[in-house]
Length: 336
Image 1 (tube, rainbow, N blue to C red):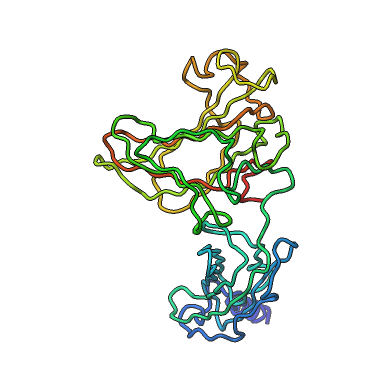
Image 2: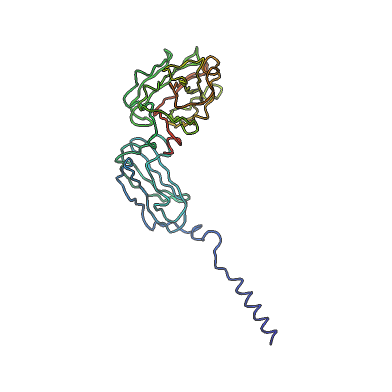
């Protein structure tokens, strides 16, 4: 009798141990089932004022877990915001939008097309929303150098070669309606042109934070992907930061610092460049701020910012339009 009890217990354990209650891996329906829209795409607010801290989130439900993508496109600005996820439901937790962008330019006060699509499925749903007021970037500590909405400030001294162009362009700006075009060909010099932005003539007046780790210079640059005959980027963009260390209202290269940043403009369209002040390089020119100063990065003592467009004289056409020069504190401006 005792042996029967042992055998029975063994058989019971064998069968119960083979029961499987937890499913590992995806459901077969998620892999092979048809996609059905259980609840159509909708949103909590289709007339949104981002400047008043309003947000938008989207809702939808599907018959299976699927990779989905929402693309919001500004009909005037051509700005884009892309939201992606993998789920069988879209809701506030995975689709909240505060008016920011995935791809420049910025959104305007405009109508937008909203399209929901799915990976590996042809289904798509479209709707629209209206931006009553656009997002305001910044945390209250930002300083705008220029956005060119009032034209080119005559106090911004500049020089451009006679064969090159500097002008204010209306439409297709990175921010707002206007931007500064900089382009041309110069076969006798590297310099296409430069613009000085003295601190006393910035659009916003104030003092920057003294901590170089906490200050960012942001600038939108529009390139056209032009390459030289040697297949290298044709346009070199340089930014120089001049410090007035003794606060006498002037910059003296023999006793004050200059810090530099440069990049190849090897992209097409608008791109935001954000530079932490602590990452700037001391000027290499011993006669141009590379020797005489205290070698301490002091953004609160900025005298002026200079932007320069350069190109190899034999490489041909160069272009780097600019817009929305702005200082931000804490993080790059697009993160605020």
